[in-house]
Image (cartoon, rainbow, N blue to C red; front, side, top):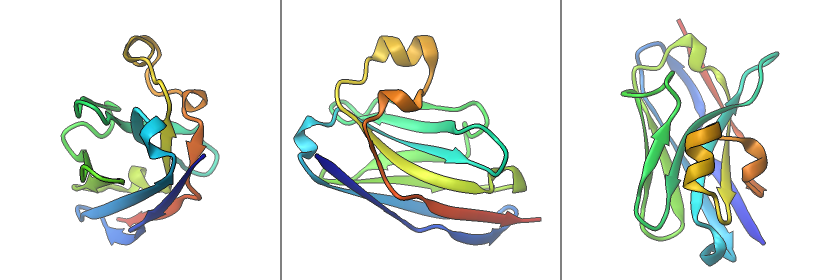
Length: 129
């Protein structure tokens, strides 16, 4: 089992920045990828960014490329650095961990929630214009 705890959400004005953190505990050696998803009210859950822990390879949603950066501290924490935030980034952000995420699957299907077996409780990000 893997436990994930997010932190760092909050309210920010458009154009501002936030950093989210996700601390993993438990059987983290079984995890090969960690990512961030978000869900705004009335919208589908969206994969935002993912990192393969072994080699640091990353993938981002088109909507956040160039503005968001996913990073790992080499231990048990994954970060999502967010800049140039806008109102469309307002959502609940969830950290997720996967065991055996396939790079082929990621390329073919993008970030799919069912590929991630562990989830945090979520942290709210609100961007005001």
